Length: 307
Ligand SMILES: [Zn+2]
Image 1: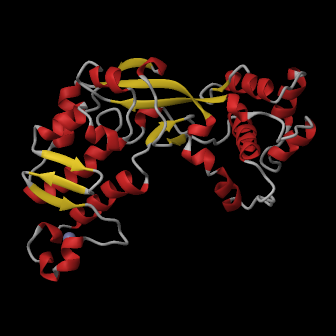
Image 2: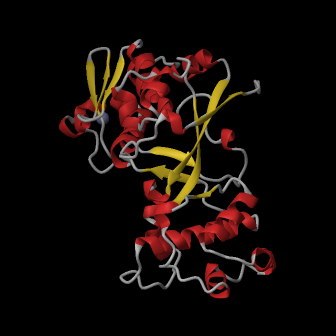
């Protein structure tokens, strides 16, 4: 079976994939219907009815979604070539530029045992519900210690959530609507997790400029990695059912298959892209998915100094 690639970054490509996947022959009629329907007051069901689409009939195992990920590195891409695109847990376990950079500054992260290690000292990671184990055991710990610094606890919780709760999954863009993807957060300068580590080390040692130091090594260079991933590799698409419930869709979820939910997602998101409306912009890749170097299309970019 031929693969169908939904590239939600591109309107024409999205329209082609929509017609290919759902076997829509009369493309002129489809385009007319899509552009003439008032999607503010109608939803994807109109499209399903108009083209008599049996949502269960279209095999989603052939569906791929175009992803973009922004990263920074200063090893010439050696780790990327060696390991492919790693999840956050692997980033701290293998010899990656980030792990080496932190090790040179006496910092490491033990993901399995949920500890940050700095200068030979252990600092436990914890969730908001668990509360800081140090403060929990010893209420006096607040005093003049690092635990009296608000950012320390907040940054520890954030770091913990990214590594444990989110299972270290890779975040990608699957579309853009609110502006260029490189303007998202700090990603073109350094990885987001470095901010959290920066806050923790700042609270412990008083001074820190990890993010700045990383940025200096990059010399304003960042990389856009582009790749196509099977629809079953995503966390959020997998949980699309929850989103539909949240949005108040009256669907008998007991009787609905995963493939059917994927197809609903594909139709809804395609309509939004083709008609210039708000669409899904982010995807979370399941931590077990392997993305090899050969699957990546890499573009090197440089950002202009805003200062
Ligand atoms: Zn504490």
